[in-house]
Structures are given as structure tokens and as C-alpha cells.
Length: 301
Image (cartoon, rainbow, N blue to C red; front, side, top):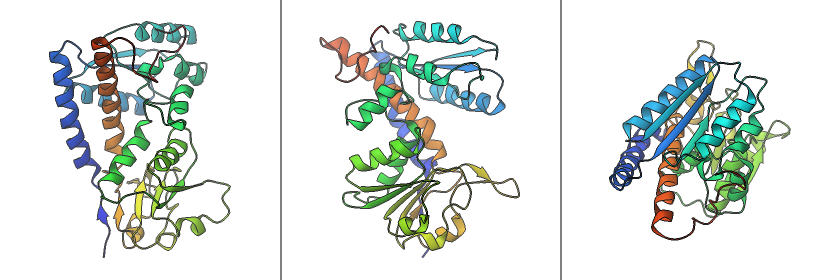
């Protein structure tokens, strides 16, 4: 029996409807959620991503600020602009679109964003909050993957999950989120000698390596949940993931398509993190002190 598709488009629409309601309540209270997006350079793909993010903000009632800079913008100037946005009470989330020009250190840029506004969840402190299971922002793609898994109705407690990929933005945080859900987690990567040995034991597989056909039908246990994070092109130029969809969908119980699976969820979870940031600020304004775990970094507003 073919696998049931996990519809990221539908789930994204449902979540955005909730985000829009929450944003409307905040706006009525004088705390409209605000997201600042910074784009440096002329990377065509980045321009598309940024345009989609700004449009999504408008669709759910956010205030958005889009700042575009030439590729020769200095690192110091970018850091100064981030510091100003950190101090702006109308901005609840700051996103600097990657990649940056080679003369700008992305690590410095990410760490310059106040933890309370790190809605991408990429900073060292945000990663630490995830490790320690403290309140904070989860990286958007893994966060979206967890929401997709939730739609299957399967309790992850005691399940064996295999994450293929160990990046700081997807693989590692994905494993931590699965661990928080009480799954037993295995992380596989380019140095794993027999990938199929691990994946054939998995109740949940998350493929996030950026290489097509990494996961094939013979590597999947019947009835598994398969989440495909990959974004690749096949020989005909058609968008595809890391999973051999045709083959694996005949073995798995649930699978995400590409496109239409994980992709729509990434921006949605960015919106979710931003509205949560605005809600925390609003809650803090109603009572003394700040939300635990969301204090700005020392020296940054």
C-alpha cells in the first residue's frame, strides 16, 4: 500500500491561520509582530527567498522591514545595523539572509543578533538553549519537520529515529528535537560505513544531506515515517529531494513529497518564532522581569 503523503502545504496554511490570529491580537494590544530581513549582495536565490519571507509577513499581519545592501557593504557596517535593530522595540525577529559576501564572517553576524530576536535559531546561545531544553527559538526547518511528524499521530516515545546529516542548521538540531520527544536517535553522515544498516532499523528517517537518492526503498523498514529535507535537481532539471520517492513511498507508511513537504514549513516556522517573540515581549511588559532564557546577550539591547 503506497505511503500516505504528509502535506506540508496544507499544514503550513493551517499554522499560518493560527499565526495570523495571534498577530491580530498582539496588534490590537499595540504590539504588532515585526521581522527585519537583511539581504547583502545579488545572489538570485537569496532574492527569491527574501521576497517570499516578506510576502509571508504581510499575509499574516506582521510589520516587516527589508534592507538590501550592495555586496561591498563592510562587516562593521552590517554589525552596526544589526545592533540598531536589536535596540528597536518594533522588531521582534532579525534574519540575515545567507550566504553573505566572502569578506563578511557569518558567525560574527549570527552571534551579533540578540538571542531574544534570533528567530532563525542559529546562534550559539540558541543552540545551547536547545541542548539544555530551555525556552528559546528552534531552527526553522527542524522545527517544521517535527510539526510534520506530529500530523501522523504517532507517538515518538521509544521510537528509533535516524537523522541522515549532521549540519548545524538541520541535522544536529533535528536530532535534539527528536530526543526531546523521547525518541532513540542515531545520527548518520558521510563517514557512516553502512547507512542502510541503520535506516532499516528506523521508525522515523529524516534525510538532510543534499544528495538525491541517498535513501532508497531497500534501506527503509516497512511502515516507517520518512521526512525528506533535501532540495536537489534530477537529470531533467526537476526538483527532487534526498529520497527516491517512487521507491520509498511503496515501503514507508508516511512520506513528505518534494516539493510540497518540508519546504513550505520553513518560512511558516520563521513566522511562528517571530510571533512567539512578540508574545514574550508583550507578556514581559505586563509583568516585571523577562521570560526565562530569553534575556538579551550582554552588551546587546
